[in-house]
Image 1 (cartoon, one colour):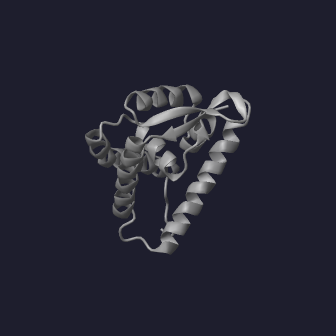
Image 2 (cartoon, helix red, strand yellow):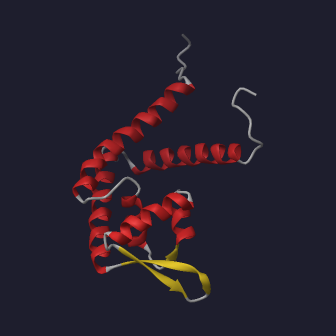
Image 3 (cartoon, one colour):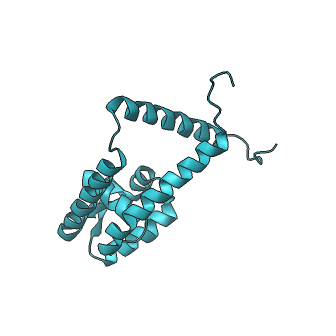
Length: 156
């Protein structure tokens, strides 16, 4: 060997999958105890940061399609966590708003995410986090540019 590190791309891909799986396994009990289904914590967290948003805006912020968002919002509304208010500028649109109970639940979710972030980034310097973020954004950019191309199988 000449001292170079040889990393297989598939190993990086597998590490990303394993990382996300481990993160979900840690988060699942927190949110299950709150009575939330997958996807709902992210919605409540985003609404905690800013509510009075349209379903489309919220779907974009949560990286969800509108149909999935709609089903989640129906369940959150049934639980009493959100309301849909008429949009003052658009008759066909609603604004998603946290109720008082929803704001309390969203605050719990926000804190759970904060605690998990502390566990995830334990032992990392700011510089390491910056490098990781830069790499992650580069991967996201590559994937987004790929989805804008004509649909082909990866082998074509």
